[in-house]
Image (tube, rainbow, N blue to C red; front, side, top):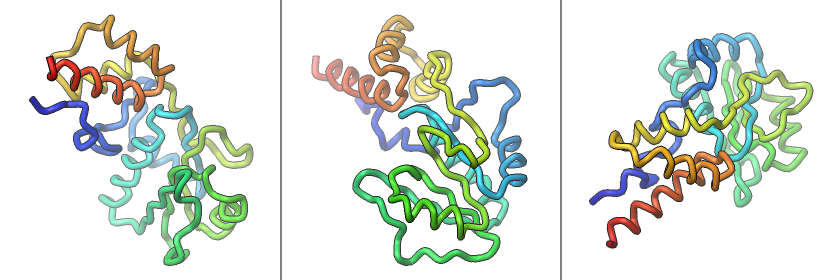
Length: 183
């Protein structure tokens, strides 16, 4: 049986971002982002920052705005050579803190519009949204992936072992599903 927790089903952007506050929405954040040329999405590892960034990126693209998405991690830490800073372009930068300081400075100085993700906020950049892992959100995410949820106590244990890191909890659920299929 196909594992519903496979990453081919739940890469960032496939499952919509789950807000922790009632009444919060992508459209509300879009309006807030329009008011701040540079802003940041802040939160711990695996709390949905990338998912939220991709949700906003998709909305910008639907509106026909010029965008460029830059993804950085421990292996990819430099701004690509082909990046040009054009007027009316919004840069979506995931893993901003992985960049060298001079590249962070460059993006902050030459980007007309910038939305970035960070684990800890930059004090002078307005926070667009602070992601907060909660078990109730984890339940909603898992329910979107598999309608017949495992027992809540199993999910609670997985969530607690992950320290609230949704990504790690989903990896554990993947492994559990694989083991179940072997039996």
